[in-house]
Image (cartoon, rainbow, N blue to C red; front, top):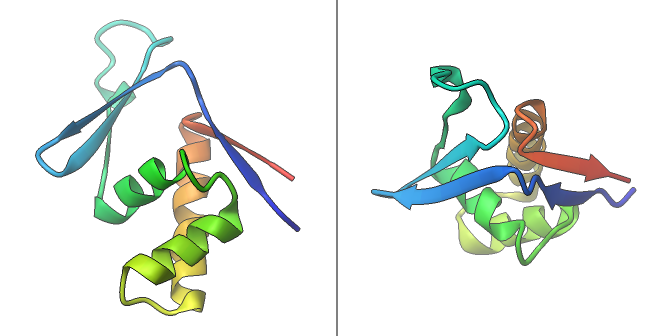
Length: 94
């Protein structure tokens, strides 16, 4: 089943010193837990969503870019997408 990914438009994203930082626009002021930093793999996937907005395309892109096999890439992409969905950074649809 093909899963499509859509980024939440109510986020500000910034790339600072090799890290991606996501800040939701609709949150209570002064909530420190509303600032999210992404590790290098999550940051790569976050940016790749712009050009490869499906789970399978992201897996293929991760395999093509890094020295990682398909099962490991699939596990990483699925985990990261679930984490991004849990903070409402993305929506995943079938």
